[in-house]
Image (cartoon, rainbow, N blue to C red; front, side, top):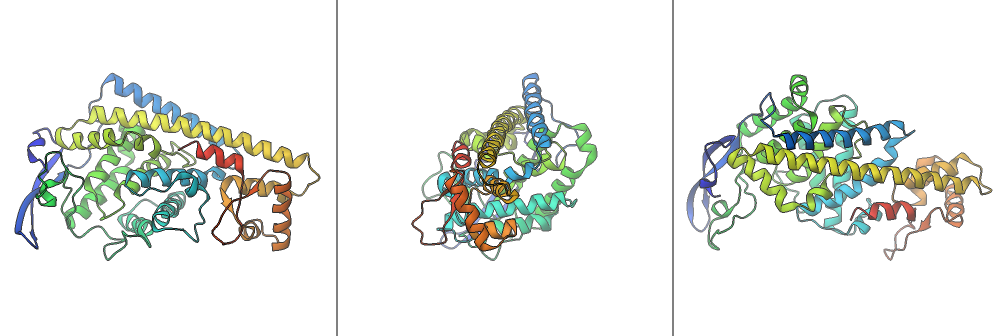
Length: 402
């Protein structure tokens, strides 16, 4: 890490770290530990306040639409699959969105797919926890990290625990090919130990502090909390994905979003270098204003895109139900299957049986009838597993996220 990049304005301290390399012996360097987040907003420019206001307006429009829907939760899982694909790609785990949307979560075809689908399970656990009225705790974050890395290459003795070893992030320009990783790294986050755990608790307390919520706009709060989490880098793996999920959790917890369907990672993935540069510039020179402006633009654009997708899915849902109404089918279960096909991008007859609480024979017949109406269709697959079905119109809308 280039220690000279850290100016006197850096919102934290460089602390000494040391270790031993098996080939080269003892080494020493420094890691960056951020200061606790402030109780007041950093000084922001007029342009940044406008970006924050635009983001709030886009989030309000998304929330207003969700509140008018009979069951906005229908759109949670398909949104999470799109988010899972993009947020994983940001961290170097890539699976095509078309495959992620239709993957069988009980039988992932690869470890990469397992890792992507784990994100959905982790996010659902986090949202259920918040909706049950529980505050985020270090123990809950550890559980979420354990879910995220389960059965992946990131699973190990440190899984489900705040890290107990030093990690480094990226590689800085100009680093020599023979340099030690800690010297060649772009950024070296907090050393492990009790201070790291305490700083993580302080962040969660800050996020839950109602006084902070009254003093700082929720968009700015989310930006500051995201920076702090990524800079602390509390886990050995999964920090980026957990941190971006916490953006939505934070807005959900503050009451900005009734339903956490916001998909943020596609926007940041498309601007990956700029995203990492802004986070680094905060650490080195307290460049809060450009970072918050960038973050607010991302939230605003993401909220607008999520809102447009939600409206389109509502229209498709209504069109699918209208097709059922015009048919000879009159059972409420047919409409329930339409809802199920919106909330589950692909599914089996067994899943329909379980969800609708009907017999397998009835579920199979109902699926066949909706296939004949061209509401749903068999999913082409060569896996040899159970037949899977999907709603092509829903799938195509979600695939537009790619």
